[in-house]
Length: 470
Image (spheres, rainbow, N blue to C red):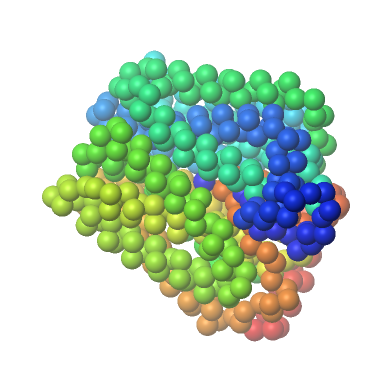
């Protein structure tokens, strides 16, 4: 489940005051504050949406346990969100192009706000799956509209800061949603109503914003098999990262409840996982700009696998829980979450800006499919082999990606350092890759005007160049 290291073109030649000289991990402080001031309504609305999203996933996991759903059934329910996200990312852009941003955003928010309330009225796994599907579909639309608005509101010089703050709002909202579990009992209806209210309130600042609705153009995407030939590690890495994210966000609260954690402790457990991802994205990304990208992926996966296998023992009810369990899940979240951006960056190292735009939706397809499989596979393992397989499943996914990255490093040489782009911190939402600050706005427009045949020919030529160099 978006931010960037300072773009190279921001040289720091600024004469507007002392605050401009203060560097943050997200660029010059003054530029960051200006970005926030210009788009505060959109960021406020996004923050409310992500609070509701973060609370909803963990709440449903806990409530499913309370209602006596089997672990496998709960995993299936959770997969509905990711399937809806995948379908929504494909269908909503056509809907937006036809009826416009404002109507689309209002319709998607209404769907998301209503679907969460149905869970309280009809307590049935299949109905819950359908509602999770609708929620995922609606959130895909909300992300697409909001992110295209962000893209339109920014300029080439500020897109890095815009993307940075968007990542903070997105992951910060998800983390905050975990701690809202403590407001009321998951066995009651209040938290469901609160989620509906948060999503409904998010519409207000966005729809009352004075900024105009952006022009919306969809771009042709590249075939997933063709992109795999260009960057096997990028595509496979996104799919495997999806498995990890689906497991963590779909089954994390279920695992915590099954090993005896209280609601308060579940919120700390899930919050630590998200905050770990926030804390480690920048240093890992910075490291990948200096070292070989594959080596960083290998090291990150190896470290995450070790942490996951250790956590499988720590989290056993026979051993007991404590601060060490929260530390373990924070490390796992911190190492798993950046893999999304690492795989996007690794793929983009082989592509031109126009090809990056075409590849972005294909990478989203890969991570969405992985996420849809991650929750039910983890649930099945937990039900048949024990709750500790929550961590084992994540560890196995980490090991698999680590070994594949090692194999790819043997098969293909590294990209020349002068051709490597900057790492961009991002959360896994549908249009995150198109907000890459290294892609100029005019290049995005040009890419949106390319037809499917042009995209196909472009990637065929690229593949021929790569095969001749191996």
